[in-house]
Image (tube, rainbow over all chains, first blue to last red; front, side):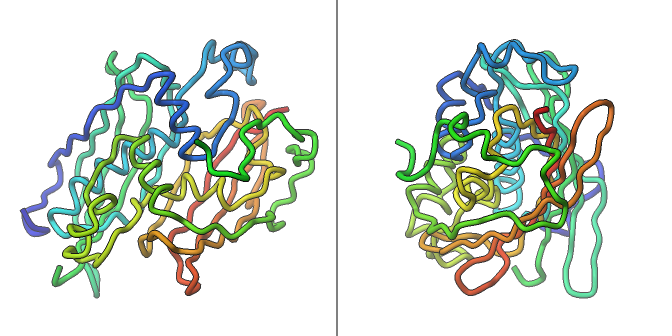
Length: 144
Length: 157
């Protein structure tokens, strides 16, 4: 597989991730983000605007890391470099959920100095709900 | 184990942090330089289940186009908290992350001394929610941009 083989509509599947209370705690330690939304069940029963989480939630950025892993696992072997990732969180992810990231190539483009692929991103939970969505840009430098 | 010197109780000194009313778009945030270690990189990688040898296997990494161990692109997740002090408003309990976008230039590497330039970029109210947009650029010790990004947070009221 090379850049020339990439076509709009091609799909990429990432590895599943199943957060637990322990993995969320581990992410707190690894990211230094100890927001009580990820640690304190009682705190999460409050109302946050119109939202009541009703239990601790996984960090949105844990999801970001899972998506980024999908992009690098796909792009490293074919000479690609992850250049951009934008994400929006749709539904909280909780301990016991299983999420799976996926991407679809939306376009390829050659510029004056390099080559690029744009991708749409979606992360689904075990009920098929979209928990996160976004877009990514991967560069395929000439000569790599 | 959390790295020494980093506060794990986000309630501590919470009243010292700027609330939505106090945040001035354009005003720089206080930041602190941080030396990224192989251990911190690998701890992050394990937490998200990313065990790629570019982050773990020195021989593999040396023979790759990167010529040595690197951090994964999303290491800014750690750097955001590692490069900001305990009274930074990103730590306010109840901060909800609504979305982020990041652009990547160079990989961070073990031993890099990372510097963050950060500010609030914008604040607004939408659907009764208090939003702040934050804008961040991480540099290495050679003043090369590692990555830049912005995030949309809903602030506690």
